[in-house]
Length: 417
Image (cartoon, rainbow, N blue to C red; front, top):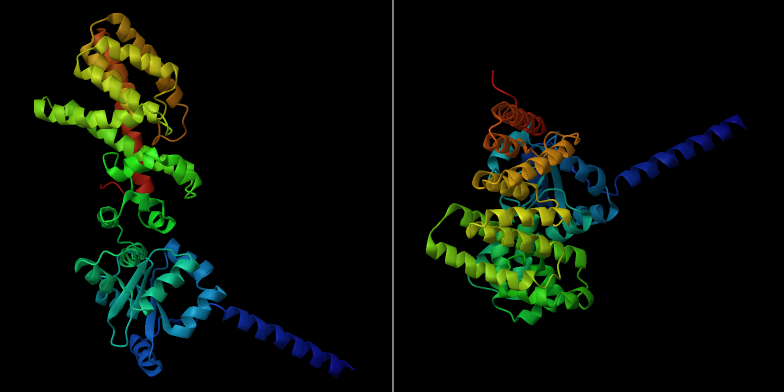
């Protein structure tokens, strides 16, 4: 009886072990840090491409892939059926040699490469990838839709939807995203604006419509309700996208008109502002009133109406129109301080900035804390209170130093001794 029980337990235990092993093998089966010559040999023997995961032990996204993506059954089913799978720590063994050999393709970690049997890279991806994206990206490489091939085809002048779509997908997968906005812009010039309401077309180029001066941006702005309900675009995301583009355009006008007195340049900026105002005054996108207010205050500066600038700033503050615009508020109050003579206005600025600084000082992180001490110092100087001006200036410098220290900690920068 005891022998029978022992055999049952033994067989049951082996069953659990076999199940565990089978479950463990659901994901990608890798040759890990094995001699590169052996990987090439198996690729030739099996007549397969090599999928190579280039990782380091300190890389967070690399660990994410290994823990959450590579073990998935759908991933294992695809990669085990089509590739010889290898992974290398790029800081030891053959990994160091491969890192040097393929350095033009390894832009960061993780880098994911498709390599032919002769050791030539034919496709690449980079960064953490969701299972579906990883499979789709490497399937494209397997089907010949490789980044080099698509780039060659695109540069030869091919601009059909499928080519542009696949090229953009390959660039995204390889984390070579810097040229995508230009590619999207060029493609939009080849299609009627109404095609933007095609879900596939929107999915390809929609995220790159951010320039308020373009016909595409203005079309989307005017048709925003249709994009929300007919195309199914998330209204919040679309408003944020349009708002960010508008914010950059307004910032450009203010920065340029602050630095120049050239009549031709100012005329160009005035014409640009007119284009923006036509949209801003419709107030259909979140924070458009903020950007309109900033332009109005800038116009007062250009015409030398400093007292009116102060009144509008106070009005905007009362309505919270300029919330989250700390740099603009501080810079504008500093400008008014430097150009106004009215002590009533100066004391008003002092009261506002002091209250703002006291509120900012309650922020735990020095890095994100607003620093208005320079404005406070300027007001005290203008009022002839030198001691208080010196104290405020010291506070400004100390806070800036704290910001720098915290920034260095975040990026792991050590001071040289």
